[in-house]
Length: 165
Image (cartoon, rainbow, N blue to C red):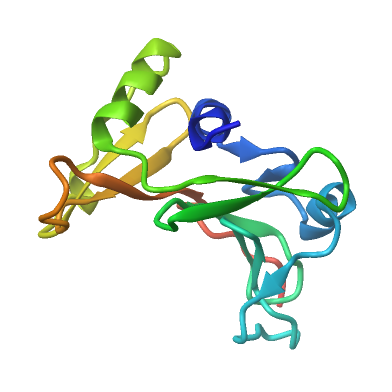
């Protein structure tokens, strides 16, 4: 398994296993088990709102409902850790895929993409998959590399919900 085996289905669907924007966090924990880590900030309910399974980060509503509002795959780790399909195990694979590799793999998979100007700034560039709204962000600041390197892939709720409190 390599990171592109994870990112292509994510790019096509905007989901990773049961993790999708609008789903409940408990749907994910039923499939993947308890998160391996969580953020130190808490929401109005006193619970953390950032949960992680290695390189997979899930952010939930900061009020009471724990609806998933964003999913981020951090690809800027030298070695990425990923929940295995076998309970209690994890997968490890190299991070930092190169711009050319990502675009080539998306093209080969028949996954159309476009430049994403709102996140193309000094030191980074971005592309978006229109079908899923998944955004790939690349760093352009590493002078030791010939091409940009993927640092994160994400999808988020552009229209936050109101959960009542």
